[in-house]
Image (cartoon, rainbow, N blue to C red; front, side, top):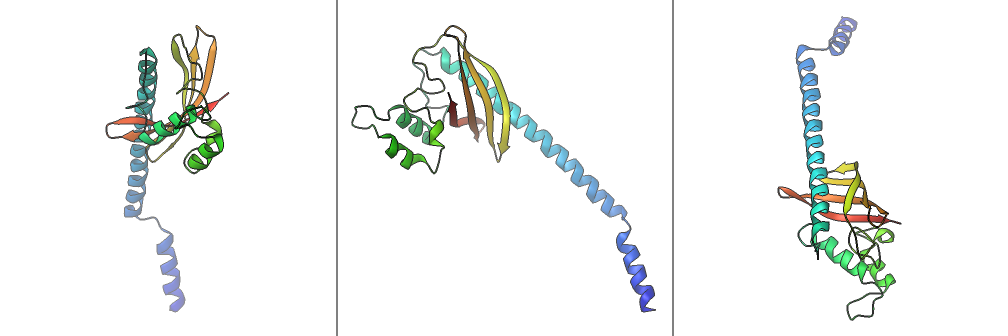
Length: 176
């Protein structure tokens, strides 16, 4: 008798139930919806980034304010001013010690401006902008900014974050 009860119990556990199939199907559908939403969000982030960079370089004296997080703006401003002969400039060691826990300082673009290393530019175009990672409303795009007039390409990994109904740049890794 005990053997029969165990056998019935085991056979019931291995049979998929109609309810189990419905739960499994709902889980698959929810995953598809989440993936579709994530795809829409990353496309919106990419579109925002491209338009923001185009607009930025059309200005005569562009500012980072409003398109970057305040933390990144402070970081990049300090990177630009490292070792300058001013009261607010830091040494490279001071800069690295201050920011090493937040940003990878070896890609900060010390001594160079925002997004490109040139002081002057012609027409900046985005010739590559590919999503390389996405996590919790943060998107990293492998980007190439090209200046045809000065025959220069700038390879950048740009991290943007969701901010309200828009986005903000929160890091730019600058590669030589």
